[in-house]
Length: 64
Image (tube, rainbow, N blue to C red; front, side):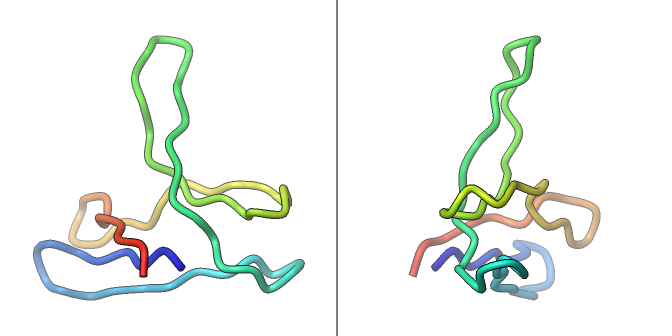
């Protein structure tokens, strides 16, 4: 399971897919300009979201 934590305040979150209840996994999405964006995605291909933000920055991910 991927756990996202804020490096500024220490808040942490776990996310699950509402369709299948699977834990979202950390991934990156490569944009057309070559840059990368951290995302969370359903392992059962139900979609993906921009990874969570806290204190104005992306939360870092660790896999437990």
